[in-house]
Image (cartoon, rainbow, N blue to C red; front, top):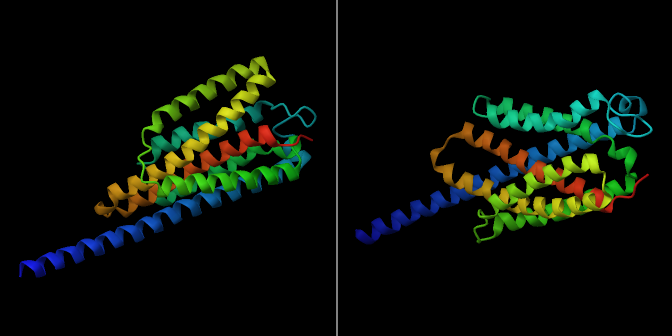
Length: 247
């Protein structure tokens, strides 16, 4: 009887583990799918505005690409929306959070539309491909590694803060050397964040899967998609500064 109970307990535990593994795969697939739709929306909006001189002129000077007042608003709107999303996530439904994310992705497209004038279309496509390959490898590492990389978080966040400060300072200095250094560090920092965020999303699911809170898991998936989306976009933009061919 004791042996039977042991076998039965082991069987239940194994079935539960298999159920969690299946749920994790579905959760991660939803994260990547949501992120991918957001990316497509961003680049569709950026291309539509960036290739239309009349639409681009609403936000930037067509000759110098310097932003006007509306352009500055659009440039900083995604940052404001990220903070607002983090503050409102608990009050939003899963459907509301997903809608907010897609609106954010569209606004990000407006803020990035200038790249289709500043860089050649071929170099944008090449850098996008390089970023996609790097992102896939880094995210796969974060998902599969047995090493706990949660300790990276504090250093990477400090690095992001340092990048933001350096970028603000360089708005006034306009130093190519500083911009080059910022781009190199930016690629490294967001490469690290890609692996770190992937492992964090995975671990958050494993910690909460037993609670069977489908609403929380749905919103967690959207928040995870936002984190990976920001990692990809930032890595792409810093690589574009390094490798892109200017018009």
